[in-house]
Image 1: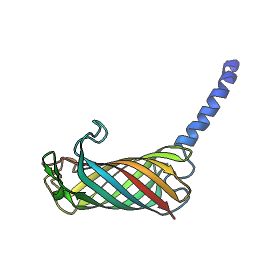
Image 2: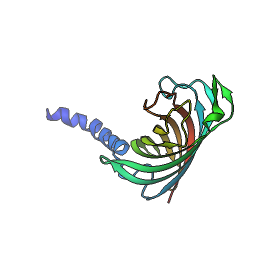
Image 3: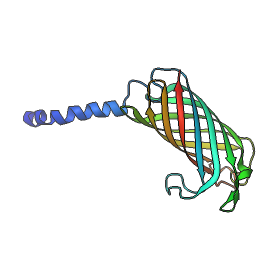
Image 4: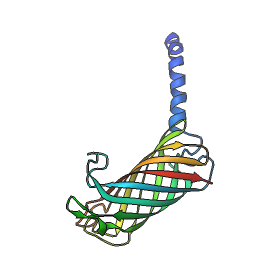
Length: 191
């Protein structure tokens, strides 16, 4: 038994160290040791899909977002709390939808948790809720729920960039729930 254990130590110890550095970061991978963050994001809208099925129908619909964040933890997992202000922008008609009817501001609060970290890269997911300024034929309620998945890269201690997939829905609280789906790019600044 002792020989088997000693033989496995060169495999087990580096694996544990790798897992520890990836999944249990000592420092918040979103923000490092900073207590505040501003981010700006821009996304392209898609008519169908978000992850499964993948989006294949881009539409003339966009989102711009400004976010203020502070670090926190979620069951000891590094996280960040966010206040978001977004503006969706529709510019034409496609697939039977008049996208200009969905140019609407949205305010919402979210929380993102860090799922994975490796060197300067990190992955996270977040969810939250808020209000859009008016009901419409696509989301028949002012109440919206948001889900987001992001892959980030820390350029340095103060700046990072994130690729994101973002989904808005009313969670079937109204009859119309065709959702909004965006793929985009964000830039974060810690201070």
